[in-house]
Amino acid sequence: MHLDCTITLMSPDGQITDAIVLVETDPDGDIAQIYLLPLARLSPRAPYALVGMDRSDAVTKFAQMTCARFTRGTHITLASGAQKPIEALVVGDRVLTRNDGAQPVRWVGQSTVRAVGDFAPICIRAGALNNDRDLIVSPDHRLFIYQRKDRLGAGRSELLVKARHLVNGESVIVQDGGFVDYFELLFDSHQIIYAEGIAAESMLINTRTKSSVPDDVSAQLSTHSSAGLSGLDVTEALLDRPDATELLRRASLR
Figure 1 (cartoon, rainbow, N blue to C red):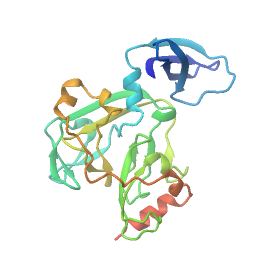
Figure 2: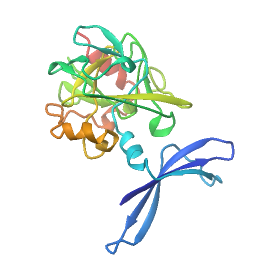
Figure 3: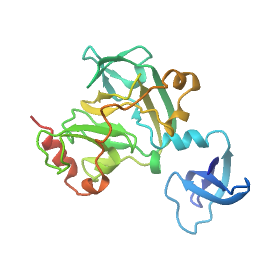
Figure 4: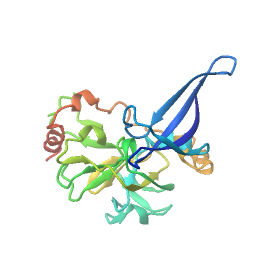
């Protein structure tokens, strides 16, 4: 399977949607099947027009779909306890981490994308998880929850929960439409940091996300790992209930 290109489609009412073209080849290297991976919902049987194609960014777009990304304006807790907007962070800034204390930032990534489909950010409203301000992150960004009482029934106290699985239309919503500025924070290893008072993961380098990082940076992080955080993911099925966010909020209270 090859990531061939990214195409841009326009609907009859002028809405723009990006999609990734994937090509499956047979053992002889000939094309066997061609697939389309839309980055937002497409209307069935609508006569979309092809208005653009880019062969250079398909791999990066595919990687960005699962990257842990914060939005512009997110306040990150530094080692000193000070709060700093993510767009003001620079390489070398020391950030407070849950497991390894003060850690220097190794790379800050930034991109602007259409806020639709898998790129539409998730807003965790102030108070939803005992946060003072809204936290807005990418859909697959995982939040770290420490349950003082296992109200969710996960069987453990430490949890990693994807933001998209907490959407309830009230305290956690999808901000769909327009454009969004996303930022990635990379450390020597995968970390839990603090954003708007919520414990959340930094960017994890793996086989899929590696292509979104400059080659010279990823080469320096060949041993990047998520030691200590594996096995903490909560399944979507366990969170498929309207009161999941409230249960997690109450579970994390002292």
